[in-house]
Image (cartoon, rainbow over all chains, first blue to last red; front, side, top):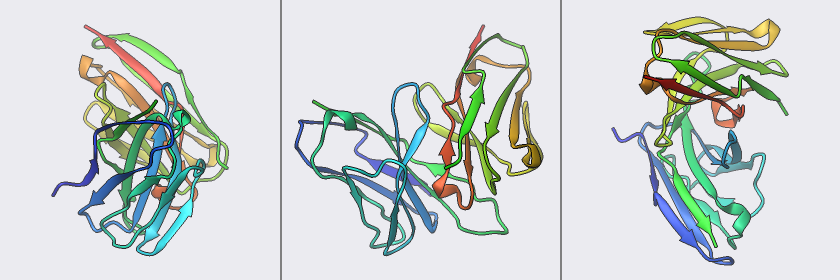
Length: 115
Length: 109
């Protein structure tokens, strides 16, 4: 049971380049989310998904796209990288069950630098 | 959206000391969790505690939902407790959580 797996762990981009951060979970969680963490701050929600085929915007969605074609995978696409997108990105997942603990499980993060 | 305030922002302790971290939130929530981010950046879920009290070893947490705050207690602190502690709340599902800015804990030997 691997939990939440993110790739790559580190990435350097030039301004204007595009890339996809990968996220996969093997816990059959309905909910998946992407957060970014800037130095000295908490995590801010970028996009989330309540299930395959359903996505929605979080607090800071501009410059990012997501899709959810399967329950397991939730990739995050940077369309045209900007220095302001330099950050650590975390993918998370959880159950949607009223009767059970809805704990949030995180991947190990992707450190992205945009030059 | 919900506002989350954590205090204190920084805390320095000697090994063996006890501490209390606080999380205030601006609206009613159905989901509240505490996380520890270790020095390597990994986020570990400590408690899922939308109300009531829970204990896990040297750590315990209490949430008073009607008064919109939660407390995390760390007893007999160890150097491995160092890191950043985050409170995260949500109206509905954890996947839409709003995080506080964290409390940075440093435990000195």
